[in-house]
Length: 289
Length: 136
Image (tube, rainbow over all chains, first blue to last red; front, top):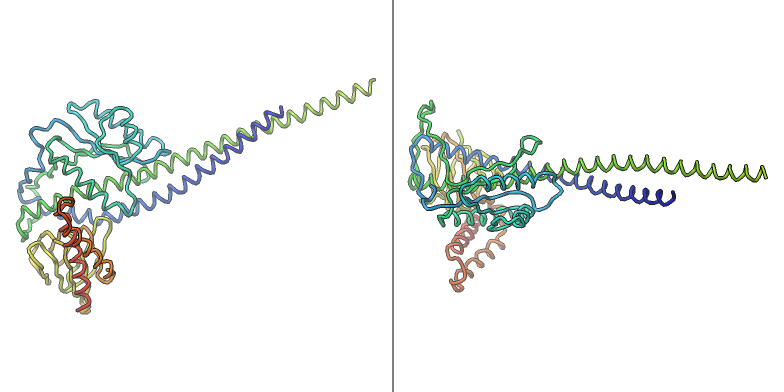
């Protein structure tokens, strides 16, 4: 009986430390999530202004430079996956992995993968998928340099003519809910349909040097910026997912602790009762004798 | 009536203010914008954005490449990076220029020449922004 009590006590101590760790992780994730959301919000000014500028080109029927269209001899698709470096974020990474697996399964073309998020890259590699490169998530101050290199890597691969499309896979956030990951086409660039029935009077812009070159520069920046957007969204989602997972783990630990506490108390009382019985029985035996 | 100037970089909005004159480093050369300018779109190369405010003071920025759009008395600048000239550390800027020069002067086998030239261009533009502020 005594052994049971000691074991229970040890278990309770273990559960308490686990609970402390999960609670700490939950609070850290909450703070990181707030910062990530702030960053996402602040980046919206640029993105909106860039989008507005893209819109001004809509009225004109502009030819996209041929390098943005799908190459003729392409036989593969490139998936760029944004996920997390570490686990403990619930189904976050698994959802991404499942989507990728399904995509590869259903795709008629070969699929190559690039991962930004060590854990997912490593898992997919273990399962035998072809990973071209597995990057760790950039730290906040390294982000712009990382994105410059990352964009260059993707453009180089696109210009190699191997891929018919490059698609981005990441989980986004709607309010405080992490949405299931989805794939969006990055290249070939999909121009929005020309708005022939628009009531907006089309403005006549002076374009330095010429319309085509400014349009090309705008499209290029629009595409590069969508990589930043994917990274920021994925990051915010990761922190929300971890916060929720750690919150659940904390509550489970508390429930487990309560259950153990109950068992412990019952065992302790049973032990006391048994000792009293033994004493009384002994006393009676002596009394009778 | 003033011109509304907005300077954005991918991570956040750098500045939003009124000016009476704006000069931007377009790919075709430095361009001055006064009120009621015709609608304009252009690419920017690394250089200086100079704005004269209604109170006659100057606001000077270094911007690396980007885009600019002018319409209805608003100038929207989308730069890859931007710094207020006041906040540029002259020593660091000169060190950056020397580094870029060094990289270009050493063997061209091992470096990407275009990148080195771009880095030099940027560092010179940054220094120009600081010097402009000091002399005006």
